[in-house]
Image 1 (cartoon, rainbow, N blue to C red):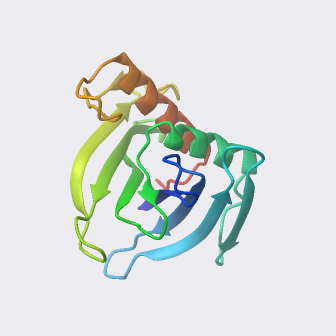
Image 2: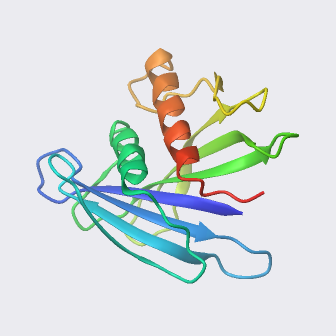
Length: 173
């Protein structure tokens, strides 16, 4: 299984994330998860600068698709102050349809309460493509923007995040 771990940070201390860190992992049975891509986007409020490393057999990731995913991720306001990595978002394809296309994208919002502590699942969400046409049309009723109400704004955030994640094609069947 492949998954993406996304981290956003406010390095300027102004209450807004300006750096996005994307870790693309490959998970294999009986082995530790392998970090395949390590991409950092900085100065997200203006012309973003992307740097990163790719390991062997790495995919060619399109910078505009990465930027689209990062923009969707930043709309969640799920970020950390400088030098902290307590909040992360893990995104992965959970199921494939009969045509071999992804039909379930899962989002695990994780947070550790202590520095260096084990991250706990604090919220999860999912987007579904029920007819395998490549369009996510059904969403869990989750309050991903943490305003106390699970509404259409949350569903749009889930749709946008799921669509941009699928655009990265970081999944394997």
